[in-house]
Length: 188
View 1 (cartoon, one colour):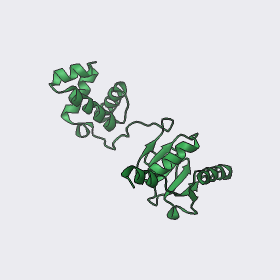
View 2 (cartoon, one colour; view 1 turned 90 degrees about the vertical axis):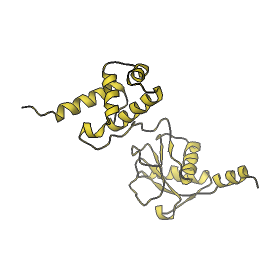
View 3 (tube, rainbow, N blue to C red; view 1 turned 120 degrees about the vertical axis):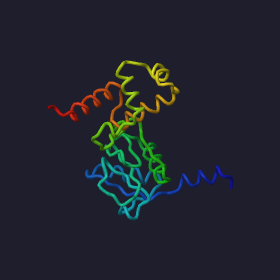
View 4 (cartoon, helix red, strand yellow; view 1 turned 180 degrees about the horizontal axis):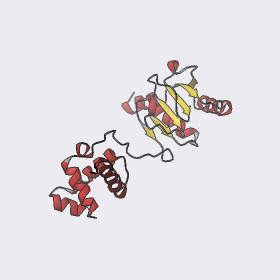
């Protein structure tokens, strides 16, 4: 058997899927979908290869999860609540194989903020320089020229700033930094 054939057989293996859904009608619909996809429905998460949840999953036994319409981005699989049978089947197989799955319609939260209160400790000196240049309205290209770094490095620092501040845009980054600076300033 060739490597490609072996991989196809591995991908198409029958999975044991536990289902978590509060609504009995939704649970029955998901059960039918799982059976129609050629998988077995497991009675518990412990007996499953993967867990399919309607919304966020309450389980934490270490099994991979696919959440439909959930908001917990720590899940291995996160699909829109209205995902179709093919998307759910593909996500279950991918997550069972150790992959992370996100659908375009799933909850999009951007970068999560790091829990840290001291902005000076949180940001590197170079990130502070980049943030300052953003505040002056400079483009990435002009920031690269001013700081004598590559355009790629500027983009790296901006992505790091966004992640550390928990924001998605330059304007949000400036607002968050200003807010943090105001909070940390002691008035005499």
